[in-house]
Length: 606
Image (cartoon, rainbow, N blue to C red; front, side, top):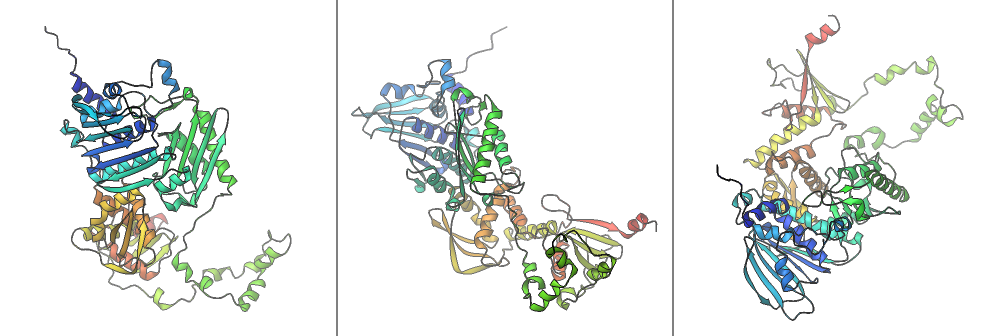
């Protein structure tokens, strides 16, 4: 028998180890930015090309490195932060394990330029496959410039697993935001393919949050600040009205390090209990200062998952601090109702409350029970209820709304294709379509989702939706991440009736919207479309186009609780049964249930 176990060559071992730390260009961005922060820089510039696949470069004005340190920095587990095991429990710097540069050098071509302030010249080092290919003196400003080129050039299988440039750029933006938000006292800039995405001057935490997440938060942030002997917490939460359908704008930092914690997120969601809908997520950027000995940050290679020594204390502190902040700023639970346009045209709203109506209302027995002391619990006897049937008599209405449906309306999904004889709405959510064999109970939002989905599918496959041009084009500013997303969606949005033109600095000019959308709602429509798209983006089984179509169908569909006229119900049912698959939504929910008259008779013993 021969021996078969052998040591891996260093370059292969480094590539395997690099897979835990450098998973995509954004991973390198995170490590290089954190190294620049640790170097004491107060000015850090990030430059990427081809979404980081061609180049990721970070330039800082920090302390720089000596020639020996510059060379040693690329060795595995070479670090200036750890000298004993006890140091692991006193970590306050961003990096400490000495993995970042070694991992980057294993899977990319690296160029390092660095100079300490006291030296006349710096050092230039070029590496490939973990080996130094060039080393020489160089004249550069004090600080460090490190460039990572052609990521995964020597591991093509891993390069093939990278996503589109737009997707990878969004990951880079996420990592940049997390580091830049942690250190508002540092100047940061971010340039992609020669275009500046962020230019962040030094300032306060609130200024930095607004710079990164958008001006929409300018007047909608609530300050959080609590101190104790055990821990401190500070930062901001968004007012309840800023809650979104996606988790995007949520940031927890422990000792200035971004972390993911479902446990702490649960504490914060409890603080917002009954203030926002259950399926919405509040904005927050909260910083926890804690003795490093009370936590373990070494549980995951990316250092984004940590363990607290006493989770219950931290949970209670976070929840209490946020509740206190919301109460202090008089943020109380509110219900946000979107007024149904149909309600605005009802008599009770649109017609004046005349003197005659006032007098009639004041003479009613019900009115007196509210204005007379100790009478609110009383209800008149039988005589007072003798006209109760009046409530159920059909009121006179205009003939346009209540005229009978056309007799030829067909429900084509039914075997015998019976005719629909009558339509009415139930609980402002369901449409009852009667036929001679029974009836259908149609969920109006599900039906409209199916209709819109097939309409949008046809649009991107050769039947573009008409665009109504805006008389006065609007200019909208988006966050950097949303700007990248919009650029990615623009080709499909054109087919769907949206006319948007990039205008630089994360702004777009809205030249037109689909013809069936009411003018004046352009901004809200596009914002909601992006939020809905991001809500779908976690499902990897759908293509970008499929996510967009489903997002728009869900966002634009008529919601439950909306009053529909008989004409609108007829149009909805007609359009539904012109669809190829009228019985289910794009997400597989049932659109209608079918009830047969024979079954109803049996229920009543007939």
